[in-house]
Amino acid sequence: MAPSISHNEAADTHHLLLNHNRFIIWEDKYNLGIPILDEQHRGIVTLINSLHFGIQHHYIENTFAPVIEMMNDYTRIHFEIEEAFLEMLDFSRAERHRKLHHELMEQLLHVGNKSLYNKDPYPFLDFLKGWWISHICSEDLLFRDYLIGGAGG
Ligand SMILES: [Fe+2]
Ligand SMILES: [Fe+2]
Image (cartoon, rainbow, N blue to C red; front, side, top):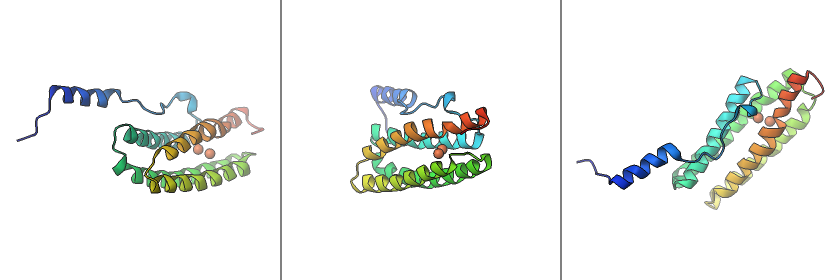
């Protein structure tokens, strides 16, 4: 016989499924106008939000390691493709941007490993939030300005 759930439990589940707070909500203003890069940035946001959901709703024990692994792999793919675009666009700040990616990748691995070792996801979440604000929402958006402006990047 299927386990029965109380009216309150059902109401809580319903509320959770429909109303959980997303940590980052994607907005059109974040789009660079380069579809593959925009999709990948949304993919990164999806992973950050999954980590946040896991922390908020106590699923983190089983989800933390896979999220870190996916974030590491996906970031490598994303940086590789973004850097190829920088070359194609002849973006004048390409070298600086590549260097920022290199530093971010090292920090990502370091903070992820440390957080996993300490079983504490918050430093990793804080790092990802900082990355979102200081890199994706500022440095990456310079490509759009460069594309729109046509030069100068
Ligand atoms: Fe990016
Ligand atoms: Fe970037």
